[in-house]
Amino acid sequence: MQILGADPVTPLIVTGRGLGGSIASLFTISLLDNHISSWNFRNRPLCITFGSPLVGDKKLQQAISRSSNWNSCFIHVVSRNDPLPRLFVTNYMPLGTFLFCSDSGSTCFENPDSNLEILITLNKVHGQNQGFDSAEYGNLVEKLRRKTIFKDSSTPTIDKNNSDSLAIGISLQLQQTLRLTPQLLQEHDININVLETKIKKLEDFIQKKTSFDPSKKLNEMKRHMMVEEAELKPQREGAAFRNRWLFGGTTYRRMVEPLAIEWLEEDSTKTKNELNSTSKKKVEVILTIDSCFWAHVEEAILACKELKEVKDKEEVLNKLVEFEDYVYGLLKDYAVSPEIFLRQSSYMSWWKDYKAIKGSSYTSKLANFMNDAGKIKLYGLGAYDFP
Image (cartoon, rainbow, N blue to C red; front, side, top):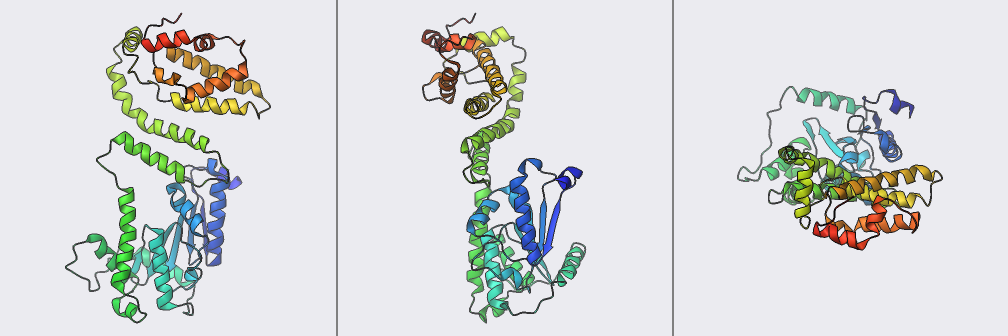
């Protein structure tokens, strides 16, 4: 933790070679899991390994690769001649980004299953008995630096009639960078066309999965992306999913709220009384204006549950009283939809718990309103005048 607090802007780089690289990966996972609140986009740890064996099974690989924040923290540099990264390909799965290197350049694929296919193919072609000096990674890194300045113009023979750019790119990467030529693969009973087709399907699946669908509305697409990310992010065993709903809802609100700025500016000339009058007339079709409302409701539900566990109840009770005042202010301005009073709504679920905590004798502006079904009915008709 002293390292984390030394310079919050400078990223922490964890690195290792061979088995040290595997330890570096596990250490980075531990950092992400135990100190997740300490990281932001700029100072997240970056794990760079050189020729390290695989460290996790399918479940770990899925947990890491499906969270873009975690997956981007791992870069594995692998030489085509190094047998160590291929040591556990029958039991473990790749995670993070793999940079496959050779004397002629480097290449990488997005899909972890594509990386696994490359490792398996290299293992079949070269086996585990090939001599390799791990110090050669220094030379590979230096050659990569030179490649950024001097472009190699040599290209292998490929099918010029193939108009599929993805297929051509995969063929170039396999044959030119990794030297997995048709002749070499044929010697080991591997059909390069089958290998290229398989990797193309895997890579094509990734591209289609992450592509933006123009037929969907912007808000719908953002909501889908946010929910999917929240559902697939790494979680501790038994973590409460309700917290993820709350944080996911807040994230969605932060994405969508700026889109309403123009609408708010257009209505800025109207007085508060005019807005209130308009809302009363159209109460049946109004939407809840404050986009934070349902996030606040979820926070209030969690606060009610907290009262059963925390020792300092005063602080939690004060938060709930503040929420009361907030809700009553929205109701008074006719700024919330009457749909919040539906029996199965989250708001009514909160009110039921809160009423049980406060007791039947509790009185407040909101309690006086909520305990009178007639007032709620008049609100739904736009006919209730708040005192």
